[in-house]
Length: 485
Image (cartoon, helix red, strand yellow):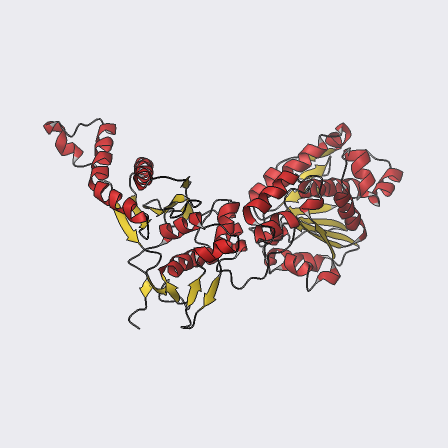
């Protein structure tokens, strides 16, 4: 493919290789990264979203494969989606850009290799969920590619350090800086002198639309962690007064949980102000988020109607599951609770009749009545909840005491996220609401959450979705109240 003289030239000129051989046009940020990879053993790049990280990583893989004899290039990322659907697909795309590359380098789902040298001259994908993902790659020429490095466990990084003593062993790690701890964070802080640590602000990238930047500013504010991580490419603020860390939300969005489908909890937060929203948030098995609904400027009867529709929908989809509906009854929510409580028996009866009809039975026919009675009825409970209720602990082992039930509810979300027991949608609005609520320790030594009015004064919208999630996760009869202490 390349003669010896060309290989020697391009081995030291990755930018020219990308332009001449891959036939791509790197921007200045991408050029700087490629040149750093050439000049340094370890390059760490923190950046905003959409700046062309996957492209430059794929170019690096192809460059290293074509300009080194018998190289090994292990690539890893926190999830299969990021590794296979994005990075690995990006490599395939750029190989197709030049027929000569496509002829000489073979792309498969399991590895990319030089034709005729499948076992000795290759790049391979290894998901970072395996602690041994980067172990066992011994060669004279090795390039480690770590995508979305902030989400990769430190155990995965450990074998890389031991391998960096080779003459031509290189490390390129890139990602959005979502965590304030770990290998990637340290490469930009206490261990920075060991790396070529680079920063790409999305506002300075030709690949990031100005409209996207402005939308993030409008939705979350320029001082928010969402803006810092997803646009500016900066690590989140060290904010000890935020109850829930954004990195927990990011992890929960990538989490896959096995769920027992025996219970559905629906939290309903009813809007009390003109610019607030009413939200219905369902959880499956107290672990998996289902699609939530947002409604604006609706009467309580309408919110009740939407709840009935959701209840019946889940009763059809999960016939063995009990359904527990938890309504915030402070303010307008009491009307929704009253409506649902009064309709409870009717809803259960309608669901039962529908199940009978689906089984080909008519409960009005005496001969079929006995068979109908064998069909399970919906176990439906309507629970009254109060954000301003008594305080206490999330559970017996919890060292934190909350001043009221709002703290207990949000503390439950916090605990589930910390312990890896909750899956969330990849939703910036929800992440922002969860991570932007602050707390203080009051004079009684209890943790007190910021009031919604105070949040609005500092430009943060009401956390309606997060409140509905907290209601769904909350069990009003199980919390450890401490009023008797």
